[in-house]
Length: 569
Image (tube, rainbow, N blue to C red; front, side, top):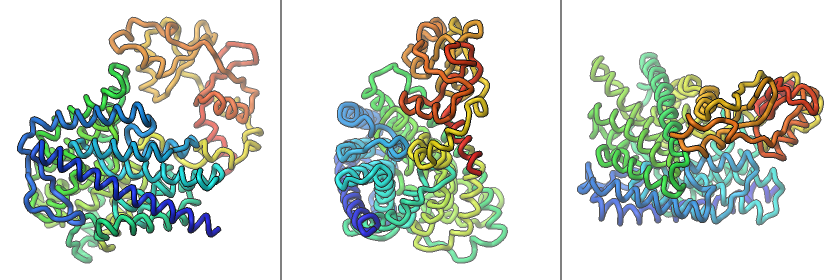
C-alpha cells in the first residue's frame, strides 16, 4: 500500500515536475531565438509568469512568421516520424488512446514530445503546453510502472497519474491535475483508482515545478466578492454557458474538418506539419493572439487594457483556425491551452458586448475566466476538474458558483463530440476495462439481440459514394454486398489510400478487402469480443449461418458496451 499510494506517485511526480521544468526552459530558449530575434515579437506574459512591460503588440517582421512556423513544423514532423510516431498531434489524446488500448509509452516518446512541442510553440505555432506535458507525464508514469514491474492495471493507473501530474505542474493547479487524471479518459465516468495516487503525484510535481517558476497562479485578477452570485449575474453566466456550447460545436467541427483534410495521403506525414505550420503562421501574422499559447492576451483583458470587441472576436476565430492547422496537420502540441484561450476570448467578448449594447456593468475579468473553463469543459467533457481549476487559477472561490452554472450548461449542450476523439463514454466502453467485467457476462448474451441493421455499399459503387456514406453515418467501415451476398469490406483507410480526385472513378471492389471475418446471430458477444481483440477491428458483419454469405446485420464494439450496461443495470 505504501508503494502504491506514496512511493510510486512521488517518483512519478518528481520526474514529471523535472520534465515540465526542462520543457519550459526549452520553450523559452526557442521563443527567444526564433520569435524574439528573428520575427521581432516579444510575447505578452500572464501575471504568474512575470510581467513584461516592453511587449510588442504586432511582430516587427510578420512576413517571417509563416516561414518560422513551417520550419518548426517540418523539423517536428521529421523527429516525430522517425523517432516517435505515437507522439504526433494532440498530446493528451495520445495519452488517452494509450490508456484505453493498453499501449506502453516510453521515456523516449516523452523526450521527443518535449523537443517537438517546444519547437512547434517556440517557432510561433498555435498550440498549448498542457497537452505535451500530459503525454510526457503519461510516458513517465508508464515507464515507472514497467521499471517497478507493475501489473497491467497498475501500469494503466500510473499512466493516468503521470498525465494529471503534468497538468498540475504546468498549470500550477495540483487539485485540478489530480482530478483530471481520473476524469479525462471518459465523457461520463471516472478512473477512481487514480484519484489518491493522483493527489500525491500532482502535489509533488507542482512543488518541483514551483521551486523553479514560483507558486503564484498563472493569471491575476481582482474578483469582487458576491457580485457574481446575484440572480441577474447568474443569468448572464447561464447565457455564457449557452454561447460556449455553441462555440464548442463550431471549434470541434473546424478542428476535425481540417484534420480530415490533412489525413488524406497527399503528402508525406513529416511534410504535413510544415504545410499546417505555414498556414498557422499566416493566421498569426495577421492576428497575433494566435501566436504561441497567447495567455498574455487574456491577462491584458483581465487588466482592463484590451477592450476592442472586434479584435477579441477575431482573436478567438484565429486561434480556432491556428490550432486546427498546427495540430490537425500532425504538428506536436496540445489543444488544452488553445481551448482555454478561445473560451477566455469568448467570455471577454460576451461580457464586453453586453456592457456596450445593454449598458450593463458585467465584470469582464470574471467572465473571461469563467469562459476559459466553460469552453474547455464542453470541448474536453471534463466539467469537475475545470471547476476546481477556477479556484486554482484565481486563488479563491468567488467564481465557483457562476462557473458551476456556466460549465454544466456548456457541458450538457455542447454535443457528444469531444476534442479528444480517443475518449469513451464510460469504463464499460473501454477495452482496458473489459476484462474487469469478465467475459462471463458476454458469454450469456447473443449477437442476434444486439446486432444492428447494416449500412452497405455495392461492389460497383464509386469509392467517393462509400466515403460520403461513412462520413454521413460516422462509421469507419462498410460491408460490400452483391445480390444480397457479402463479398467484402471497405474501410476508411482503404478509401484514404485513393487520391481524392480519383475516387469518383475507382470502384469499391478495387479497394475492398475480401479477407472476411464474420459471426452469426447465434454467436455470443464473448466470441465477438475475442475476434475483435485478436484482429484489431471494431465491427463485424453478421451472416445468417456458418458458411453463409447472406448478410443479416452488423455488430460493433459499442454494441458490446451497450449490452454490458443493460445487463448490469
